[in-house]
Image (cartoon, rainbow over all chains, first blue to last red; front, side):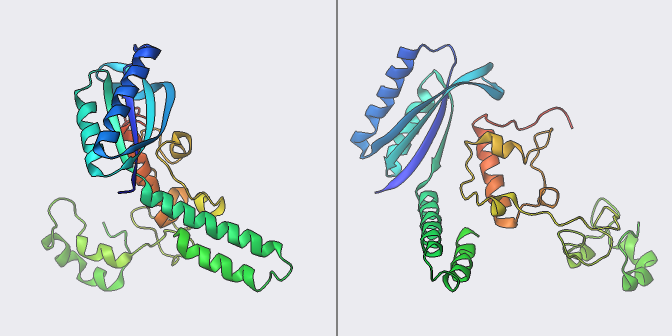
Length: 136
Length: 127
């Protein structure tokens, strides 16, 4: 299973740094047993929320990128729901999106390389035409 | 009520309109789809735009994502998304922003995701 998920969750703002780290490590520990890997954890810091969530106006944002199958996220979300400091979370599946972006990037790089060569004019009109359906 | 100029409709209009009530509102829904995107986008037929009665169609607006080649429309970059959201928090229609259809769709999805994670509001000042 190589699905990649992006999990963003908001923690109540009155959490200390170490409590937050403890929480993150607890959640990360859930991932390997269910057959996943944590690729990245990013603490995005305190931000003002766009609307009041559980009577909080600010929150600490954390982003985790996890690779694994469906059961991994199922378990993780279940944990998040019962964890008291976590006030909101959102999971987005991103592997298809990454595939699409990589494809576009490759096309753009190929176009750049080709246009750098002297025999450019014939290739250049072909490449944007090929790129346009890819971006659409 | 006959904002939309349609010659055949107008002949049958006085008797037909009240009968074909679509439940609320005087305009029958039947002739709407045939209008298509009148007034929307560049090069549209020079007739009055649907519901606005504008005589001039807009100057050509280009899709920001197509011109700047932004491929990644993410829910995380709320600053970019915020440009396409009105003061009230509503998503701005693409006839005002000039965004092309596939990008508008992705934009809408991203804005809705951002709203769910409290990066963008659902509703701003009352509108």
